[in-house]
Amino acid sequence: MNVRTSLLALCLTVAANAQNSLPVVPTGSPYLWGPPNTKPQVFFDMTVNTTVTLQGLTYYAITPVGTAGSIEVWITNPGITTYVGSETNAANWSRLTLGPSTYPATPTIPSVCFTTGGVLQPGTYGVAVRYNNVGAYFFLGNGTNQNFANAELSITAGATQADAFTVAPFSPYVFSGTIYYGNGAIAHNCATKVDYGAGCYATRGSFYQRFNSAAATAAALNGRSLTLTFTGSGYIVGQGVGVSYIPPTVAATPLPANNNLETTVPLPSPLLHPTGMTTQLYVATNGYVSDAANATPPGALSYLPNQGGLLNTPATMWALAWHDFVSSEVGSGLIKYEQVGSLMVITWDGVESYPSTTLNPSTMQIQFDLASNNVNYVWVTMDPFGGSPYFDQTVVGFSAGGPSPDLGPTDVTTVSTLVLTAPESLPLTLAASAAPVLGTTIGLTTSNEGVPGVGIDFLSLGPIAAPGVDLGILGAPGCAALLDINQGFGTLITNLGTPLPGMTVSFPIPGTASLAGNVIASQSVFLDAAANPFGIKTSNAVRLTLGLFAL
Image (cartoon, rainbow, N blue to C red):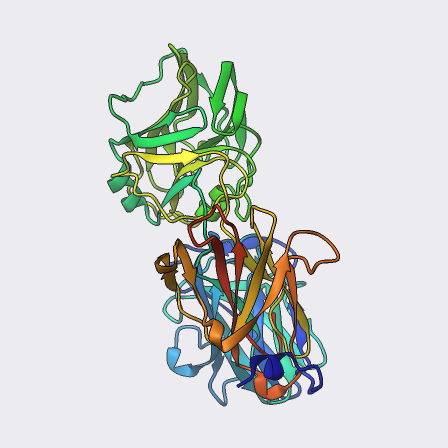
């Protein structure tokens, strides 16, 4: 098969299926269902006026970035025209369709393409939208925010349920999101773009470890300490040899009791760190300290710890234990600070976590040595119980500030000489501008090339699953081939300036309906004589599934 002829010919004009939508955007009081290890679902009744094929949906969510889950749509069996009365009877329901959901880096509205189209004939159905490993927002129904309609569909909401078909529902509650569909019983092929594999080369200036339960956090951290030894251009991370917990004295200054806020703590002398210096610290209730305001890390809320937020925070962040603490809870201890010799000591002194109905304090401490510029993390006793309705995750680590490469987690229980350097460097990176819908044109942009020069962006019908084929045998260790270049062709890219082609390759996709579902892979190679003996760097790859529509 000739890739250029089959995939880039601009002569065929079969149109993709038209896509319609019904936005369900209620006003009023939001409610979060969690934690995500349950299977919450939301009910509503839906009247279909003409045959439609459900294609996907968006939904409002609060979930740590990168969390993988799925969405299922269930409908009542023939003859049952409402969810009411069937909420705890699974025999009255059939699954119509489902789709994967990965919480993205920045939006709070993930989109889900269903793996198969869900055809609905005219009629009225009870509907249940089930959230697997997803924390979704619903809204409290108030009589004025429960009905939504267009020419094809109408919805009357509704109720929620903490675990699918097993417990009594709460009513009235309203689904929040947008339902996407096509008119008629139509072909269903969703266009998608998925990054896979990793580019080379990256240098590490940040680190993290994520714990997904309170029990795991306590088991790993209780009685442990780490030291970040300042080298002048970075840190060396190791176990805290000779580091001790310093109990707060009566002279320690308590920070105001609050929830999800930051308080500024002045320093008596400057603190040097890998990317600069600071004369004050911003202490967040939720277990981290920064050199500038950092109340909402990118892609997250301050009470939803995740490595994506830490690795991309604009401010330098010391994540002692990024977690959903609440010092304003009745009976909670406070966060306190004081200077002890050359140390600025900040202590979470028996600070509570959610839920507020459980006694679950944590005591931990971060010590900034203003003489050596070293930083100590000290964990005394961490809450082992959990049960928060807003997730129990904890992230430990450090972010140098700005975009950081994700080189995988670091085991803080065994780390000994992890070298963090500044400035960090990101790997050669390839990104697609949009999902490859038939009849459209997308851009494939290569970045982080680091040196002036030229490269090639490849398109291929032969993706190679990650981690790919290591090119060390050619003299490029750590770089991987993630596609078969013999099944495709390459296009010149360069950063040497106009009128040369630039770093973005334009990919026009034919409107040929028969191409829907085909998979094409793209990966870039850039020449860099200093990178390795072979003189190249490779990017991650992008898997493009051609489709009739995209969300």
